[in-house]
Length: 263
Ligand SMILES: Nc1ncnc2c1ncn2[C@@H]1O[C@H](COP(=O)(O)OP(=O)(O)OP(=O)(O)O)[C@@H](O)[C@H]1O
Image (tube, rainbow, N blue to C red; front, side, top):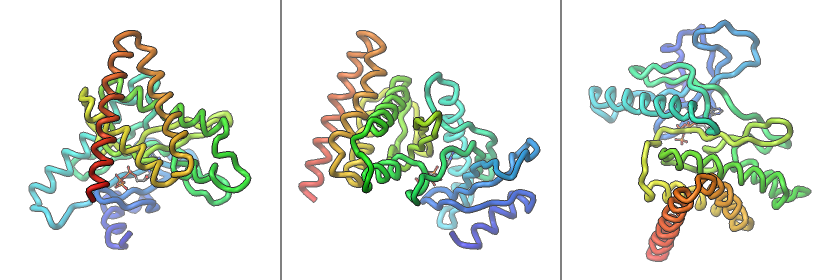
């Protein structure tokens, strides 16, 4: 991340808020900080996320300000709504400044052992595919089932993620088990369309296939088991809707295959 960008964010936040850059995406830059926006700092180990959408010089300033405001608000609203839904795990929204493109979030996750990196689903699966680990172990099966449940809950409540990759699923350790949390709702939406749900499932299936191809079939099966469980627990109507989503998921997958065959 360029120093100019870090300086720009520091200037906006003021020097009272120290920041550590952790990621730069196409849309936003992400930092950690030890400072809560409106509570006293209890200890230096507490961490929060600051997601900042910098101004884009290639856009007209008026359009840029409007887009930044709209996207920051949209992501914040979605997170705030999802946080209220029993069973759904998303980071807690702490503060939002739409005019400056900034949101403050609860920090989730931890570093995995043996330098496997941050505890997102992608790194977790890498860790379990490594030497002396069991890629088909109970912990992997249970975790993937729970990831499927999270997506099932999201879709059952008519929300879609829009960028469901294995890096956007953060695992939080609780009593030696991993609880999945969904992050990055920058492309999220409310939607009751089976197409949007099918695409979410397909994007995650592809992400797992591209990084963990040897085990992907089983992994995706466990994900779908967890997903289906949420729908099936909602009786006849749930079973009917599950059928519709699965049917469309199959169609999206077929379209994807045709596209990759034709190049
Ligand atoms: N609440 C959180 N807790 C811990 N880490 C987080 C949190 N939110 C974001 N991150 C970290 O910051 C990274 C980027 O965040 P996010 O995906 O929201 O930003 P983005 O700019 O949309 O990213 P990209 O363009 O790469 O998809 C995540 O992959 C994750 O490692």
